[in-house]
Length: 400
Image 1 (spheres, rainbow, N blue to C red):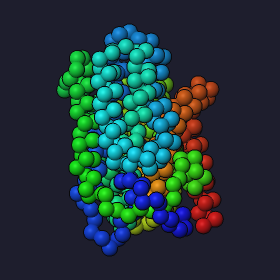
Image 2 (image 1 turned 45 degrees about the vertical axis):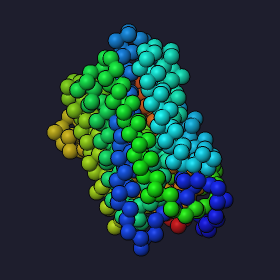
Image 3 (image 1 turned 90 degrees about the horizontal axis):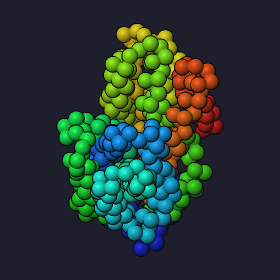
């Protein structure tokens, strides 16, 4: 994006985004509020997946139906993503986000009231449709107002806190259980808090100038295909390891009691190392650090078979979790470095689309690879994905 074009004055709220000039003081209160919004959103999202699966399991629902039901929310994310830039221009980003938080509350309440797998199919799809703009708009605001000199650390903090929010969601079920309205009320209150925090933030964000021409999600794919491939790779990595590491471990004779803590260790690394990775990007550059994370993820795929039965698997999985999710963090940092205004909105919506595609395709594709080649199909398929991304990054770097 080489030049800035003014949008029509009627474009509201989110259309007024632009990266904050470095000479201005950092808007710490606004950034903290946005991080809090997306963290609460993550708690609500992290709660719903296991909660609804537990309920369906108690109802003796077939595993295939449980899986299909769970796929409805990411499908809602994918199909709603192209609509977000247009809706944000017409309604205003703030109005759209607050409206979506209210609609998400109503949808989650309807899910709690119906308690039926077939009714949940469209409702869980709608939950994804309503939750996606809430996440995309909040993330866009954060990327836009973060000072360039601190972007690595702030986006690293954001990734860490949001990842922890996703972990808190399932943990809350241990406190309130999975029966009755109590767990649903946690999610309902969380979505309400998202809207209330955004409502309080509007005065701090409304004075930002307009910037950039309207860009669609499809148009953004042409602007930054490599960034979107990196996002899809990070999603495929996370979803595949969370869903298939237990299968890999069982093939090597490991018990569930050993593999479950390994998955927790992977998530802990995911949440703990993003600030460090963000700080490294400020010193070495986001492109160089992204390549480092991709190559480290590839090295992890090669080392996994050799370290799995060793005590070294614990620090290895911790670091591996950090660098694999670091691919997404660094993609987000590059998004803020390269785009502003409406292109930034489209970029965040395209990120949501790419994450959904990577998450939905990664696990089934790796499962097929494991069925054809054996359990080592897991590191082989993920390693191939990383090798392709690394090759494209190196080729892009040479082209300048």
